[in-house]
Amino acid sequence: MNARKQQFVVAFALFSLFFGAGNLILPPQLGFKSGPFWWLVALGFCLSAVLIPLLGILAHARLQGTMYDFGKKVSPTFSLVYCYLVYAISIGLPSPRTASVTHEMGVAPLFDTPSLLTSFVYFALVFLFVMNRSKILDIIGKLMTPAIILILFSIIGVAVFSMDGDFGGSGFTHPFSAGILEGYQTFDAIGAVVVGGVIIISINLKNKASAYHEKRKLIGRAGWLAGLGLCLIYTGLILTGALMQGEFAKDINRTALLSGISLKTLGNTANLFLSLLVSLACFTTAMGIVTGTADFVKGRFNDSQRVYMLTALFGCILGVLMGQFNVGYIIAVALPVLMLIYPITIVLIVLNVLPEKYTSKKIFRWTVITTILFSIPDFFVSLGFEEGMGSIKNWIPLSAFHMGWVVPALVVFIICNVFLKKQGD
Image (cartoon, rainbow, N blue to C red; front, side, top):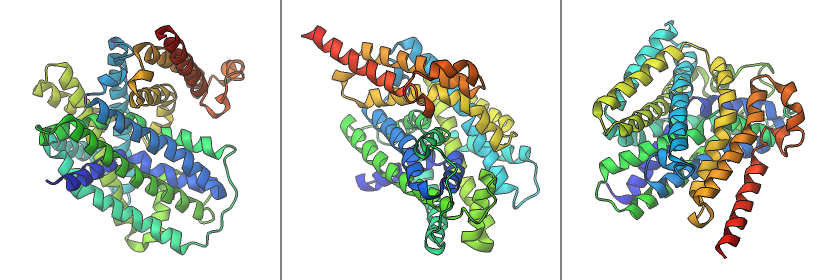
């Protein structure tokens, strides 16, 4: 395979591994609620759901290791705990969510079957593909992604060119931060450190003789292409939701809105196309999560293929069980976890992208510790303890936007760099 063709295959694979349940159902409702401020929401959403994950892929291109390498500068123990926590979250929440969305939007409108049967068949296929992981790049990059992109552009194109362009009011007080926080729910920053490792291993299986700098260039360019595609799709879906503001009830839920938009844009064939789109988008993400988790656990047990198989089987069984809950419930359960783990993941990604002269072990350690400490108030607020955290959050910058960790982490990063530079002098 020539370099340019492989670059597009990897880019398509990255796009498809990222573009799952949340990426499909979250943007339209964001636009629907934002009205004339859809562009601000889109900017915030793309910041947390495109730019940060893209930086995660670039960090993987630089490290060319596993997720363990992301946090080992803090400490080996921290990195190990972080990895197990992220993989547990990934197979426990976003992976089962893909099965729930597939049933609610892809299967239920066409067939009168129970969700348990959908989840069982769904994760049986996931397990089959995960056990053939050497073919994952080609299966996703050449077959599934083009179909996903074609259907998405059909929905967006018809909506943008056929609607009047009249926007109603906005339901957001802070559209930009609302977009950022909703981007958390895509799990894509976490996805970057999980599926980035899958891409690295898949490339190594196909190109064992390639040099480090060749693989870094391939992953980097493919990451930028995938990021551009995601940005265009998200912006288009948010704009589509905004244009449809007068077409549906204000309290419509995420899945019903996407179904309604599909019906209005694709007509009588909407259910068939939407079922195909949802199934493909969700399936590729679940496959990436289960493969990444199995790869990591396998690496911790001397590359045992048996451990790989057992981990993949456990991830699929858990997916079947958790997939019985509806999408709204899984999103609600995920929020407190995301308010704590997402800031840590973002900081680790950024630190791994920056030049090494600015990211010594001490700087890693203190910046991450600061991030953890200042994420705790948002974590407790998301659990319902807002009254107890009110006095603390009042003096933390950006805490009103649920981003109280940003300024303290940045200040500590700068102070550590200045202090260590003076010590070096």
